[in-house]
Image (cartoon, rainbow, N blue to C red; front, side, top):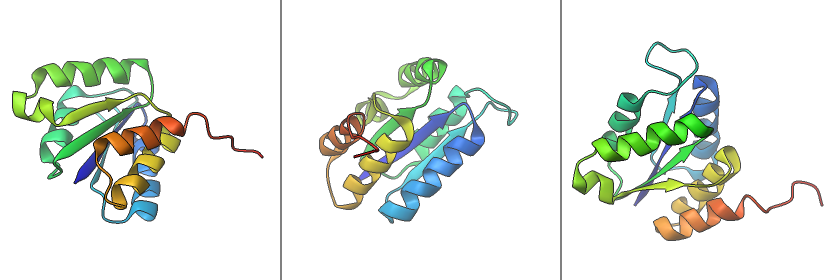
Length: 129
């Protein structure tokens, strides 16, 4: 089973994106980690680590919104146990669209590779036809 951690500088963006994924993907485990440790804008590596370790999923996809969220995620990977590090993948995809696509794919039973592929394809999907 694939789970997801959504890391945003904004608590509202992280929660809103997680809500969207849950609405469309159903039973997929999604954890939102928005803002710093005091609830302001920023990222919090300790909360990211806790979210990863708290998921019961076999594989974890980690989505980040902006540059320093990527740095925080990379730092967290260094802090994880070898076992947890082996089940986490950083996803280089649009935050909202990528998380949505990966979540829907996971809900259909896809593995991490297929979910990451779906997330990355979201980058090229036109919104207007």
